[in-house]
Length: 195
Image 1 (tube, one colour):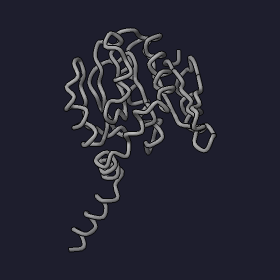
Image 2 (spheres, rainbow, N blue to C red):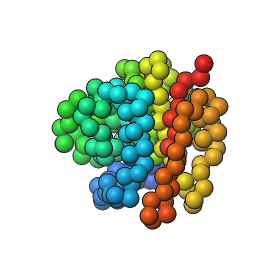
Image 3 (cartoon, helix red, strand yellow):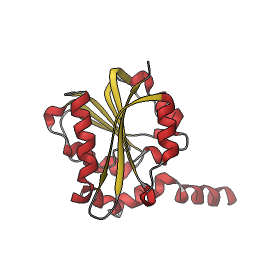
Image 4 (cartoon, helix red, strand yellow):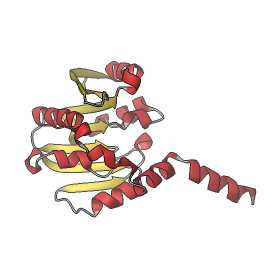
């Protein structure tokens, strides 16, 4: 009996359970509003600049809102990964061409294929070991490919430890900040492999 109760509590308090519940209750619908457009525009612009018509990997893709900001000619194939079953079910119902959406744990993601652009759009800060998660994907980045990382500036402050970690393993190419009318701000950085 105790094992069943412990299993139930663990499942109900897991991050995956919380995200599934939030997507079911439409908590994340606000991500599709005008207030979020600035950071999406930076991400899309960087992806276009560094790899027009490339293969994109969107990590923490949710319901595919970022892909909607790209023109179909901006990518050859779009792959999204999120650990929320509900989010992936919702985006797969849209039946987007040249797109693959998968359920996966970004903490220990093993994925086949090569990608010109790997995007962490407000997802890196949810990982238990972001450095390991990023370095695990090094073999999946094409020569000359880029990582694009967007992080919300919590309480008006940048997430400096995450940026310092990324700077230690990758070479920053560009950095921009966007602030919306509500006073929310995001920093978006582009990285290439060192060397």
